Amino acid sequence: MAYADSDPGRTALAPDAATAKILVAGGFGVGKTTLVGAISETEPLRTEELITEASVGIDDLAGVERKTTTTVAMDFGRITLSPALIVYLFGAPGQDRFWFMWDDLSRGALGAVVLADTRRLESCFPSVDFFEHRGIPFAIGVNCFDGRCEEDEDEIRAALDLGPDVPLVLCDARDRESVKSVVLALLEHVMRGLAVEASATW
Amino acid sequence: MRHWSEEDPWADDDPGPLVRPYTVTRGRTSSARPGLELISLISTVRPPTRDQRLQPEQNRLLALCRTPTALVEVAARLDLPVAVVRVLLDDLLDHQLVSVSPPSAVGSTDARFIQAVIDGIRRL
Image (cartoon, rainbow over all chains, first blue to last red; front, side):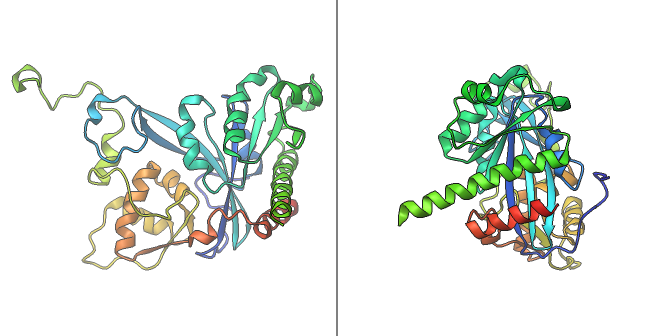
């Protein structure tokens, strides 16, 4: 049980503790925040970022009165693995117009979980494209509510046009063990990628 | 250019959410300081001296970061945008009131580090 305002799990961290970042992407309403909450030691936290049409690279407020501002919410959770190692999971909107946020988010990220819903598989296409184009390792988590999935894995893999090496895991975004298995599938995929890179340089 | 008399330049039909957070930063909207990533840990080094006049938000930040706290979590807990927290931190770093975790500790992607994350998550 965790409450946003209390500090569960806030063990005595080292000021120079290592921090890692894992992204959670996917279409609107697919369960990104639920997935983050299932594994986070806190209730998912939220920041609201102010954005304007021309916010990319803006460095002063000149002309700001002409722009429309909007807020984008970014949800995240924390897992303190040890006093020297903390993992943050970030869920953020997968719509095309928010991709500039993902540039900031994906810098230094270990990889991404793309959460898919078989009822509207197409809503995760933009996320898959984004990570493929940037060479950011990702795994697909297919969110199966109540453990039921009508389509089979091969069909989903074909529909998403996934490479054979991209992990695809059926999961329940509400279930901690299930979410752990998706995150581990991603991290093991990242490790395999590093091994391939290392052997290529030899 | 509109004449002043045509429209009150101070009137604003939709002031939006932009005003208050950037009042906190005295109008500054970006920090040029490198190494302030979303997951950089911010730690309070010492309390401010009496002549260091800080803003209430900066005092709240110092209180929060007595436990090392990631930049993005500071933003969430102070209910301020990340960009605003970056600017607030600029001043606090100038005054040497806070420290930031070293870049090498933030978002490493080397194999030993990733293996430590895998082992940690398996143990959860």
